[in-house]
Length: 172
Picture 1: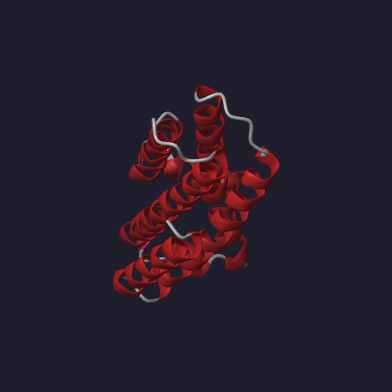
Picture 2: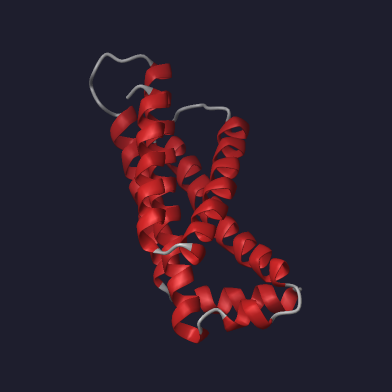
């Protein structure tokens, strides 16, 4: 188990997936700073709602990019032979998901903590972390499956639809 996770980690090292996650986490910190330091007369709950919806949108875009890059890397390397010839392919799939979810979760939770620390806002981080974790697990699994099974276009269409739903559900 440790060898498989380590091999997936080595595949991720110095690749675009890690850098896109870091980029979107930095954007998340900047958005938090801009939302909470604006001079408008908006109450704190509205600002938190806007901040959380932007975080979910950034996570969705990041998941879309990461799933595409991870599947394209696997396809370029050996046309999914690593997954197809593995005795228990679901384990390899789970290890891939664990690593991608872990990277995204750590970066985005750190971005939320840093951003809220910068603007000195108290927020229940338990709710934020649970919401972000559930969102990352579900979207990463869906996008990895769509990308590996159907390719780019259905994955992008579902990602755009997902972002539209997030915008409509949060009323921003």
